Image 1 (cartoon, one colour):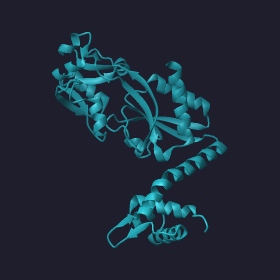
Image 2 (spheres, one colour; image 1 turned 180 degrees about the vertical axis):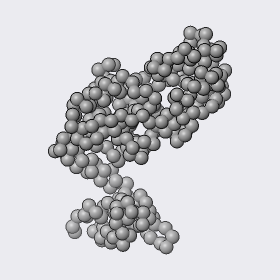
Image 3 (cartoon, rainbow, N blue to C red; image 1 turned 90 degrees about the vertical axis):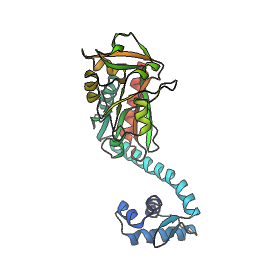
Image 4 (cartoon, rainbow, N blue to C red; image 1 turned 120 degrees about the horizontal axis):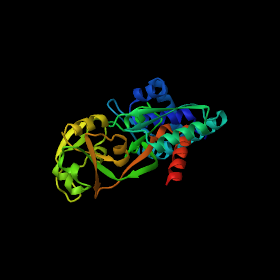
Length: 299
């Protein structure tokens, strides 16, 4: 029996994930009848049904579920290998777009410079991404990778170097009672509204930036929610609430109207490079290596 053709495997994977012949065809720029033809050819080679199709629904058979579970990672590995060899043959050229949240800090910018120096044929561009949507630009393909605030719990994303772990501070108005303290404990967050982040950010990520309870379980009053760091700091200056920020961000956005008070009792803030699992390239891996080298060198 001959081995399956690559187009048959592509058609099966698209159908297994779309569970719709029309959408699978659109994904591969093929007609529904061509998807059906490729599926029948693959089933003939395998010797069993992979898909059950009725007038109302498409679903995988147990054999189809097994094939999809084992084929998808192997297929992705083949695609990545071909892309990597092609990139090596051509050189790491083209354009690499990397996003950042909040501030383009020193390790990030040094990694950009190191990547440009090591890959002069590749145009590296930096793009600011919204505080309220840390992962959207990566998912939509608007950037190739992004430096975002931790945590990251998304199966679609690869977690690259984690760096710049720093203590948290609480941004408060100069008129706020906490502004006169040298530091506060995490339990003190229960005494003042905390500005949160709204938008497309997942709930777990938003709660990490603006928790609703202290470590001891005391409720933290919710303040306004914002979509950008600048908007949040404007509300802090107006004494509408407080905001948790890492101390490098506090240094960068220092203002005569805002005081940044160190907070004890909370995990440190950290940044991470992420990219989409299905869109990894030699450029992505090259930038990840540059960032890892820069952050390891600085400790």
